[in-house]
Length: 347
Image (cartoon, rainbow, N blue to C red):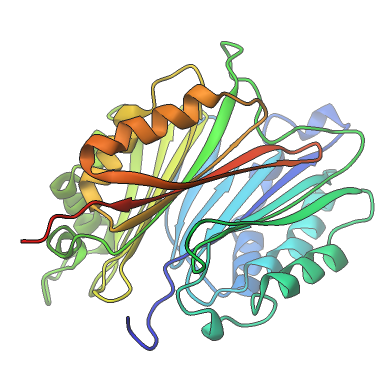
C-alpha cells in the first residue's frame, strides 16, 4: 500500500428541494446558470470538464467525479481531497432564489484509503456529522447518522440522512410504470493490474480528454453495461477515467483511479427492483476484476430477493459475499451494505 496517493473513494451528497410555485417547473434547479454552479464547485475545489443534458436532467463530469442536476434534486459525488459538504450552503442559497427550499439531505461514503490526507470537515465521520448538523436547516428534523460495519475493520459504510416532516421518502420515487427504484453504489479496490492499465493514456497521445475517454469506454466494454445509455466520458492525463450515463431520467456513473497500490473504481446507478440487475453487476466485475468490492443499495422497500440476487450474480465470477448489514433511516428508506472479496487462485 502506498504511503499516500490519490483518494479514489468518493463522498456523495444528495439534496432534494420543493417549491409551491408552478412557474418554477419544469426546469427548477436546471435554471441555475453555469456561473452559479462554478461558484458551488469552487467551494468544493473541483471544476467541470465535460457536460451533457437531456429532457430530464443535466450531467457534468468533474475534475473529481460527477454532478447531476434535476429540477428538484442535486447529486454531487467527489473524490480526492475535495470539501464536498461546503457545497450545501451555496446550493441552499441559489435554490432559494429559484423559490426552492431544501427538504432532504443524504450523505454517504466508504472508508478512505488515505484518511489523514482529508481536509476539514472530512477529517472524520464525527466531524462530518457535526458539520452537517450545524449546516442544514432546522426543518430537516428527522436525522440519523450511522456507520455500517463489515467483517473488515478497514471497510465500512457511512450514512447521514435528514428529512423534513412534510416531504417524506423523496429519495427513491416510483418510476413511470409504478416500479420501486433503488440506488446502487459499488466501490472496488485492488483492481486487476492488466485491466487497470486500460485506463492509462499513451504518453503524448495528443488527444483531448473527450476523445481518449471515448476510446477507453469502448476498449473496456463500459459501453456494454447499458447499451441504451447516452455516455459522456473523459480520460485524464496520464491516467484515470470518468463517465456519466443517461437513460431517460436514470443516471449511471463510473470513476477509475488505476494506479497500482491504491487502485479504485466506482460504479453507481439507479434501477428498478423488478429488473434483473445480474447483467449490470457481472459486467462491472468483469471490467475491473476487483480484489475487494462493496455494494450499498438504498431503497424504500425491502426485498431479500434483490440482495440474494446480487450475491448470486457475482459468485460465479469468483466474488464471495463476506458481510451483510442493513439499517433503516427515518423517512429515508433502507440501506443494505454488502462486502465481497475475490477467490483468486494462486498461480
